[in-house]
Image (cartoon, rainbow over all chains, first blue to last red; front, top):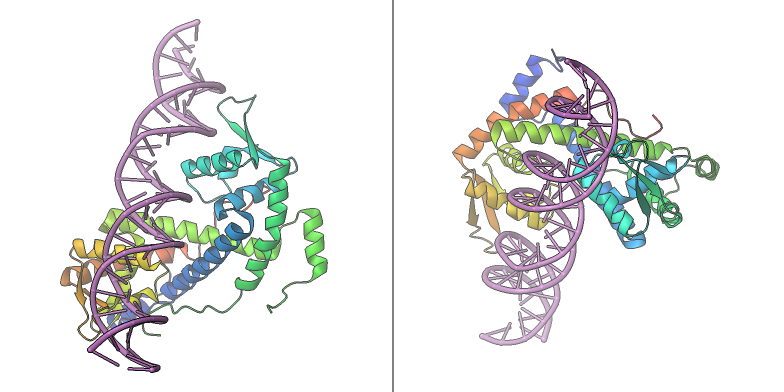
Length: 150
Length: 150
DNA sequence: AGGCATTAAATGCATTTGCATAGGATGCGT
DNA sequence: ACGCATCCTATGCAAATGCATTTAATGCCT
């Protein structure tokens, strides 16, 4: 059904002693790294470029495409947002003049999002900030303790 | 000021070709892993134990302590929530009868959170779910594409 | 053509979160 | 003892998110 990870001995021991398993430690590190970078990235993008992380990511994905446009459903596949959240992110980007939304002529249910010139410019400006924050924090040692016994 | 990571040649090339840098790839993987596990964990804890992830984490930290209690400010150090969000998580846990909140007698500004018997029980029940989800997804290959060119 | 399941996107609503602020307690300097 | 900066928690408020539902368009089957 699904793979067995670790062995019963280790599980039993950690349950008995209250020790923290390797998985939990790894998970907490992932959480800590994610929180650190997300926070820094959000602040940097917001203060420097008036963009939230979700908005930047959509711009980024579009900028990577040859024609800077795609159906919303396609963008959804590469962004970790619910369909409704993505719909609203794109609505915000549109009202900021960074993307356009046009009904797809082939499939009139779909909407094609396309980066405007201003959107492409903003993405390029923000890209440097984005790169710098990642370079600075992606591999840096974590500061915050993962558990109270540290 | 801050360390230079990578070299200008690589940066220039990726900027020109639109290639995705190693940092960005790593970051997207981190985001994808985080989203996948967070989503699964939240669903599993919610449907199985009526607990959100934030709530579970607070219970977990308290359960690891010998006396199952700590000042809120101490818990805050191991959880990635704003002070206000943590305050509300603890308020929810209290109204669910899983923790108690008592003003610290030594420092009457502080509040001591303490796991109730029911809280400890719930944490123990949920711990198995938590462990299983991590074991299943922490090292599993990622399904969702990280960029639109995949 | 008509009916029906399916798909795409938008919207109402409740929840969670963070920021800014307020309220209360502590401790230190004078 | 008084004043004042600091610390700890709670709360008002706005923004972002997910779920459920709605609206609209498509494709298929008969």
